[in-house]
Length: 120
Image 1 (tube, rainbow, N blue to C red):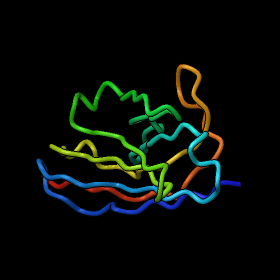
Image 2: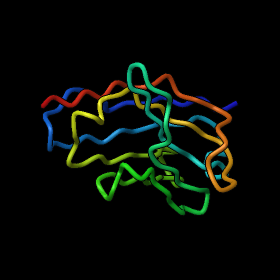
Image 3: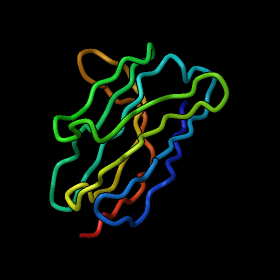
Image 4: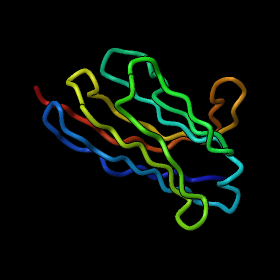
């Protein structure tokens, strides 16, 4: 069983930055593809970014070079999402997911979510 705990959300002004972290329990963290999803009120959950077990990355079209996903397998079993040039439309609950990659992420485990609010 993998447990995921997100942190780093908060309130930021438009144009600002935040770094989200997702700490994973379990010794097989490095085998999983990891991803960040987000869900805004009244909208469907959407994939923000994926990083495979081999550290390949893929991003939602709306990211457009503003976000970077990375992972630390060696010591911290943690995946990060660095978000720059934030916009009010980035406001959402951001969820971390662990799973397997087959063209897209197939989530098997979810975190509880962390709120990101971008003010205009």
